[in-house]
Structures are given as C-alpha cells and as structure tokens.
Amino acid sequence: MDKSLLVSNPFALMMNPDDVLQAMQHSDRLSRLSRRICKPLDKPMIPKSGAEQQAAFDHEVDDSEEIASDDE
Image 1 (tube, one colour):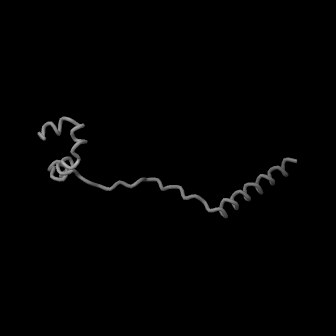
Image 2 (cartoon, rainbow, N blue to C red):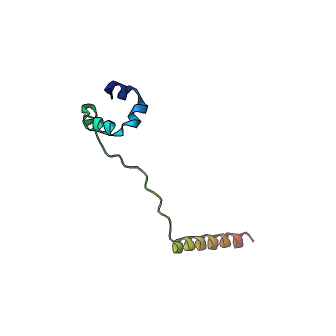
Image 3 (cartoon, helix red, strand yellow):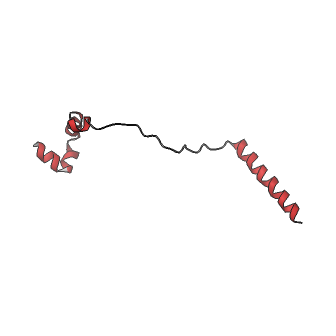
C-alpha cells in the first residue's frame, strides 16, 4: 500500500495496524519527544472497614443524643 495513502486516510490505518506500529517504532519525531511520568496529586479514598464505620456511626449517634438532651 502507498505510504502517502496510509498517512492521509485514517481508515487505511485501521486496516493495517502492524504497519502503523512499525512506523511508530521507527519514527524519529516520536523518539525525540520528552518523556516524563505524571502522578495524580490526590490519593484515592480508602474505604473504612466495617468496624471503623460502626464506631464512627456510634460516635455520631452519641453526640446527637447529647445535643438533644441539652435542648430539653
């Protein structure tokens, strides 16, 4: 297949993925790109275990009962 047709037609690229990969591996422009690893700034939330959730709920209930008894 003509290389100019391959570059100008994205559908032709889908028909020949091996040619695309080979062109990417031998590309001077791609090899000159600067590379760096970017890491996310925020950390994923780690879910609480069942015991921790129960303790947190108990603490919230105890606090709400104290507030209700102060209002009376």
